[in-house]
Length: 406
Image (cartoon, rainbow, N blue to C red; front, side, top):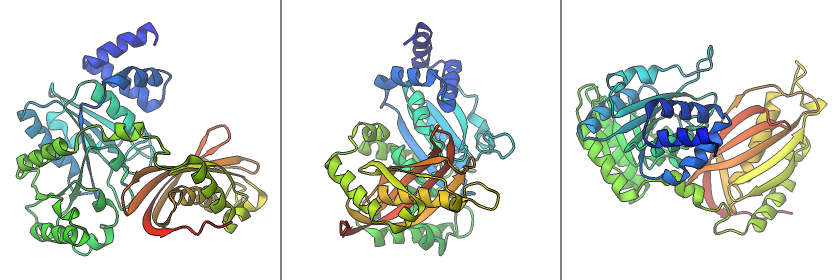
């Protein structure tokens, strides 16, 4: 590490705020210093309790975090907040609405708040959220709170980042509980019905508890709490529940995942052969000109070259073709474990156009996996690495094995 980087690292580990802000900017923007920072802090990670707060837009996540900050400060904790905001369509930066609602404690000496623009990244967080948490962890914060953008059924990337996942629900979910229970509610370590002063809050608490009882014995143990963040009601109990979960589950979930070999429990060659067979059996993929490149447990990489029949009326690659390419990689990665996985939700964003002759690569990576659900991130790029599209998808994992075609 260059001498200047050593000096930056020592100030960062000491918690210097200006250095911390510079380091986060370097990581977020992918500057040359980012790799040195990551290497320098790698042995200083795992102490912070990372708390993910997600939920539907309008549930009151930011106001709830503001109330949590007050309670945590009163308990002598140091807290960092990573607030992922939607990307501004005008400036490309964060809208900063979340940070405004947390302004009461923004200048406190034991609080550090950083807003991140999602930059089109799906999953409820930004692409560099995990790396930025590492920086805050190394800087010595006791608690790192990550607020996602308003999340829906498949935006559950926080599951692989946070040690404790809080899903915030507004009152009056009603039949919507049935619509979303297979998605974001599945990841909750704690369920919170905020705005408890509004009509329908008590009913929502009852419905969530009933939903949990119907799922499994383990799910029935997930606490369902009610809060009124604007009045500070239920906040102390929520902090107690968060601390209890952190003590039981431990810290550093994101780090354990990195240390686990991708091929643990599975022979990589066997998985690759399975993916080759599945790819060869996909007639639609063959019609697009898709070629399998590489894969393993929870991952797959494929490519295709844009041909005349892939072009739209403007002469660029049809968005449906790009979606299909990403979806093919999604299907392979999600079926790599030997069980049939059925897609239940997908979202895509487009960053740039592709033209005739461009070679496009789609790389799918498993973000999180439970007994029933798995979430995948797929990036479509040109041969020169230029991003074309980002795709996230959720699958339902069945118990049926593949027939191993071919």
